[in-house]
Amino acid sequence: MVCKTIILFCMDTTKQAAIDKLDKFIQSNLKNYSRDRNYDLGPDNRSNISMLSPYLRHRVITEEYVIKQCLSKYPINKIEKFIQEVLWRTYWKGWLELRPVVWKDYKNFLKENTNHALEKVTSFSTNIECFDEWTKELINHGYLHNHARMWYASIWIHTLKLPWQLGADLFMRHLLDGDPASNTLSWRWVAGLQTRGKSYMATASNIAKFTKNRFNPEPNQLSSVAYDNEFVEYKANSKKYTEFSEVSSAKNIGLLITSEDLDIDSCQQIKIPKHIYLMPYSQEESAIYSDNVKKFKDSLCDDICKRLLSSDSTLTRSSSSSILEWAKENQIDHIITLATPTGYINDHLMQVKKELTANSINFIKIFRDYDMTYWNYASKGFFNFFQKASQLHSRYF
Image 1 (spheres, one colour):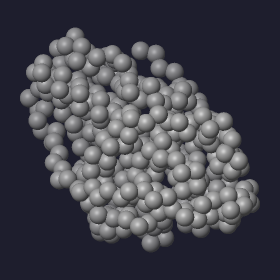
Image 2 (cartoon, rainbow, N blue to C red):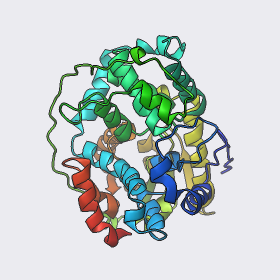
Image 3 (cartoon, rainbow, N blue to C red):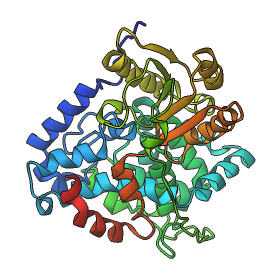
Image 4 (cartoon, helix red, strand yellow):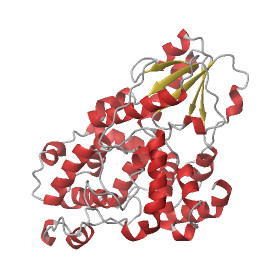
């Protein structure tokens, strides 16, 4: 098996690069993160933020690892804002896990509605300079500063009066860190659908201040009135998890690795077996994602090939070939995988599980202890979640 490394957007896609970037951020920028984080200085200057999100989204390194490293250098009260930003990712995943129908409704909307906004938006002809420039940055770099994402979503929804789902879809197509939970729910938050009566409104003065006057939109270019989206209350479900002990008697185990969680070597519950199936993205995702996003995911998977494959391991790497056929060919009776949260890959694996079960092949998700604990606290708002997470941080960090 030959694995090659592709360097994209001046971003090294190896796990070691992610660790090095985190270490550098902790040493140089973490202490000033709260003060500087809201400034969008442009794609050529990201020194005020960590730029870890593309790694965290794919769990090249985990939220747990990042928080642990940060808290080894500073007490939580000194770096609370950064810890909160990392935990927002955990919270959004847990929130959507407890309400998967939100993801289902989002996908159903996209199936029933053509993304008619793409042509106008991607031709950079909205006559709102900052918005058009952010669209170019999104497409060319696969990244936007978090504050720019909020401004962008606000203009899309409240000024251009376009459906939030279509904007979320545009982000998912192009963001290297595009995450079904964080992306979908952040767009819903801006639209006023996460918290009843609370929408996020971009203002010209805020954009000018936090771009340091790179952009100065006229106040009348941006709507000051929130678009009236119909609020729907989604009740949280209960959630139960599967433990690893179910595979202890399996004769032939296969390991499925997906780009939802690439830090497989940090999970002590999983031993690397002879047969490995690596899936960078599902067929559905392949039809959605830009070439840049797919190349980025492929490059991340190149690195895991180098890190994990021993001489006696055999690997099938595909986004289209049948997992069932792979299992049959290798006489696999149990397939294990690190749990995939609600999203495209999880949708695909739910169908795969049905096929495997029909052929007497067990399919088992292994949930990280961190996820099992923290996702359960996402039944209410973030600050309720953060309070409980802070009380538990000594257990994990």
